[in-house]
Each structure stands twice: as structure tokens, then as C-alpha cells.
Image (tube, rainbow, N blue to C red; front, side, top):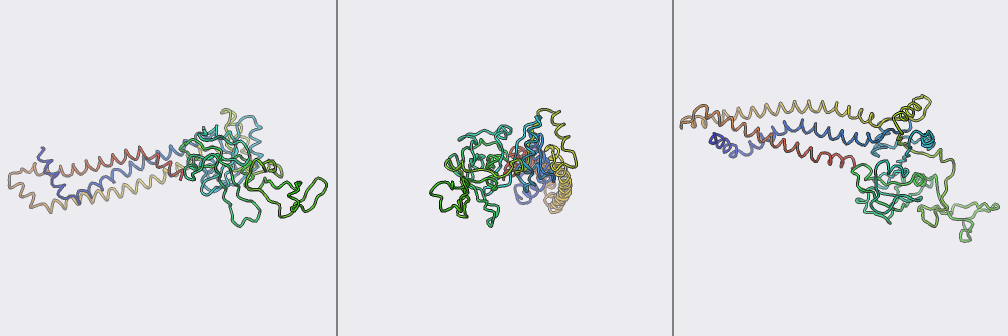
Length: 393
């Protein structure tokens, strides 16, 4: 038996190109459906883990998927803003923790997320360098931001203007980095976190300016009416919040009317969750409440439907490739008729010759299955990391 396998192996080694093509073809036939299924399962786990950890999200009426993707993964277009009063509404219900999010701005490619300190406790984010947010104008960066932008406590990050031709006077804000978060392998790693009021300052809803009552600012005073000073166009608006000017920063208008893009709602219990959801079913509501898990499952159902078509296409291609491989073996037999006849003339029995040919096929198929198994193992081991990298890219 060993001589049969040896002769089969020597023939395959003597024709490396044909053998390699056959092994690779059969390997792909075996690997593609299995590897695709492994990747889909891992993608499902990666996408649903964060959604399952987020009970409810409130946002302006529109696409629930867009709201969830922006609120959980900081992807997709920024949803329509809603009033900050919706955050207060949830908080005053006494049935849930309300965590505001405002995700409109960026610093280059990194999202700037305005939120509260509750977000860090909710996501289990821990500061490993520096400290957490304390005053207006400070920011805490994810591990990915710290690495790619090469920043740490004491450095500064400047928000990117939405439009270089902005005529509204909304200037980029220079924010002081006071902390770096521990790597969590989630979308939070690539985020710059600021206080909600700091995000409003970036939008121009809050600002600081020179103290016109000081003598050095006399050239900027248009007129004085009692204790009220009216400045001219030369009054400097600050684009950096420091210890010297932080007291001059203020907001005009009702902060309840200021924008947020979403509210993460963490109910006290299932009963509170049901009551809260029931309060947002009215047609008159201008906001919606969604369960991220349900939204992501709908998305994954669509992905699985597409996967079925892809697998079907792979199977068809695989069958075609397999038919080609069979044809190669059959043509090889015709070309080897003289070789087979010679083996039988020198004493090889018919069963011995058939054994050699069958061993060649067995070696090729076994090698292909082993390689396909190796690829599947690597996919299972490193697939999650690759998927996380794609999600965080």
C-alpha cells in the first residue's frame, strides 16, 4: 500500500502546476461557504453585542437604523437633532437614566461626541492617563485617537469646521486633552468625548468674549448704556477656553431648546421600560424610541438574506469548478494511457493501477480539505479582530 501512495505522490510532485491548481480549486470549493458562514456569525456577534448592551435610544423621527448606527457606532449621517428637553423629560420621569449624545462635529476623521459623565460609567470606560472631564472646553480621547493623533494629557485638539465659508461666526474650538481612555476594542476607541455644553460651544450656541468694562477693551466699545456695554465688530470671540476666559463663556436662550442627536435610555427595570416605550407611541410625538437590538436584528436578517444568495452563487461556481477538476482528471487518464499500459506490462495488476490513480485523487482532496480547514481556523481566530478593525476604521 505504501508503494501505491509513494507512486501517486511522485506523480503529483512531478506535475506541481497541475497539482497546485487542483488543490487550490478544491480548497476554495470547501472553504468559501464555511468561511463565509463563520464571518457572518462573527459579524453578527460584533454588531449585536453593543446593541444588546444599550436598552433604548430616543431620537428624532426618521430612520431607526440611521439613529442606532450613529448613536452606537458613530457612523452614518448625523440624524435630525431634537431638543435637549427630551433628555430632561426622560430624567424627570424617574424611571430611567438619560444619557444625552450630540454627534454632529468632528476633529479631522474622529467624531466629537458631546455627552455626560454617565456615558463613561454606562460603557465601562476607564481613564488610564490623566483624568476625566471636569470643566468646559476639555476633552477625553479614546485609545485609537491617542495613538493615531499622537496626543495625550496636556495636548490640544481642534475641531474641524463644517464649512470653510461659514459666515455665522462659528469658529473651530481648541480643546485641551485631559485624559486618555483604556482601549475597549469598541467604536469608543476612535472618539473624542466632550461635555455636552462644550459641543454647544462648538456649534456657536455658547461663547465668550472680551470684558468690555476693562480699560484695554475701550477700542472695542461701541457705546455704553449704564452698566451695559455694547461692543463693535472688533470684539474678539474666543476659540479656546482657558482659566482666564472661562468665566466669560455663556449661553443665550433656553438650553432646553438646544440640540442633541440622541438619548441613550437605561430603564430601572422591565416595567419602567414598557411604560417609557408606551409614552412615545402617539402619532403627535416628534421623537421615536427604538430598541437597538431589534433594529440590528432586522439589519442582520437582510445580511443573511444576501448571504443566502452569495452562498448559492458560491455553490454553483464550486460545482462548476468541481466539474472542471473531474474533467482534468479524465483528460489526464487519456493522456496517460501509454503510462498505464506500461505499468500493467511490467507486472502491475489492474487493481494496483486503479489504486495509484485513486491515491492521486485522495492526496489532492485531502490536501485541499486540510488547507481549507486551516483557513477556516484562521478565520475563526482572527475574524473578530478583522471585523472590529473594519467597524472602527
